[in-house]
Image (cartoon, rainbow, N blue to C red):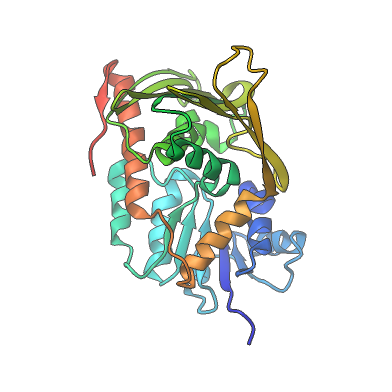
Length: 339
């Protein structure tokens, strides 16, 4: 008997789905893409044809996707303001859901996800948790090789001033913190296995878009542990993450957009000498982190291996973003609300 696969339905023809996530799902051993919905049936069919999925079903309404009994799971890459309503609609129809980040526009909206039935698998798609480089970084931190962790610092930026791009539309959840600032936050939470106690933020907004185009954030994780990052939607493209301890540091060279199916590298350094000439470089095996994520989700749906993260983790992440924007308004430190 053939091994059972999770049958995926895709909501919309969003670029991240067509270019990264759907091809990755197609490579997952326990997954198959069986349908795609758009507001235009012809557009849905064209997208499927372009992916070599001409036998998959094309729908012109999202609701038809939810009601299809031959679909087990939904992937939701819609604009941010539609993450919660579409996820809830799909889960009410009995579908498991993997939804893009950020999960909501604020924590109050995210808490609506507590309505999801307990037997439904839900995951906010932070793909970085499944890349071998981050799994290895956490192993190094947990081993004590770096000593006590003192600081994490990061940067993530790109330049995009297109007024028609969803990232530049404030009313539907555009802006740098929602789009890319979430990554230094989630990787810090992942590595430390802890939540920040309070945050302070300095934010500059585009005068036309009203989106945050530059943000500098400091997070206090308690116990003498600090995390800071800069993110920008209108600066030269750059990304880096570094974890500093009392005995050593580890740097993730391409922390967030690691090239698909290519090897990645991390650097471990004791600081002697200061020029890093004796630092150790570890090469991670080639992988598609989107495929690793899809496979983990499929295994959870098939009740083979549960996910480590779900609704409560998504709410906790959203509470940090709320505190960042509250700090923008107050100009000072803001406590992150506990669970």
